[in-house]
Image (cartoon, rainbow, N blue to C red):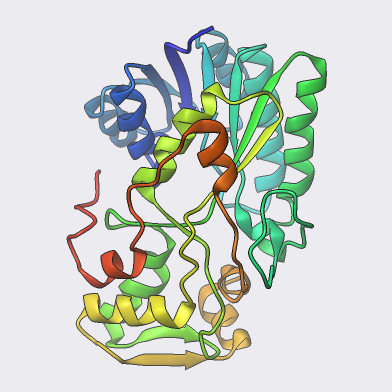
Length: 299
């Protein structure tokens, strides 16, 4: 059955705002979970109907999901109980939407260091910051055997539009200090995707077969040093980096530094083949080097 309405969590966030826009471009009506008046104003301005509540409000999630044809779960808790909250939210959302498509957000960091280019079937060896995702994703996907329609989308490092982790941990600090933080020699590879492209993939995933898993990544695999160089040019400090050991990076950035130090190369071939996904942004270093090229932040 075609999806005409979607309930979205995380709609006022960095990826969520673009996903609302992508859904609307596809002619799909959107209701979006919000916690504050500001978030409600943001999603309303983008054309979505706000639903008040948080990820721990499972009754609200279940009811909102039951009134939609499909669900996209982008929201996350940045707290010590993130795994528990995510598991409860996923259960409630899947209970509510029933046999309708439920698209769950994962992330490619669960594969750890890949060494070579791998796909979604590669062994998983996550850093501590994402280790909890494994059990939750298995639980989500298990619903495919009992009449549910789960799909997992795993974004790479998302960039563009004036937000994301690169902005928060590399570009912002570079503008303040005049140097881009660089972990080690920066020879490790990152798997990346533009925020507009990953938003489009979340929409396309509503039509994916139950039990599908997709890496939302391009085929670029720039090195961290290359990313730092591009960020430095955009931040007005070309060629200037601040070398950090992994221990120093963890002390400054938190556990996300362990993920930044991973050497990862994944392919998005499955999403292109199965869903016809065609990323339009395939020059990450070029866009990161030119402030404004990716467009202003939507807020």
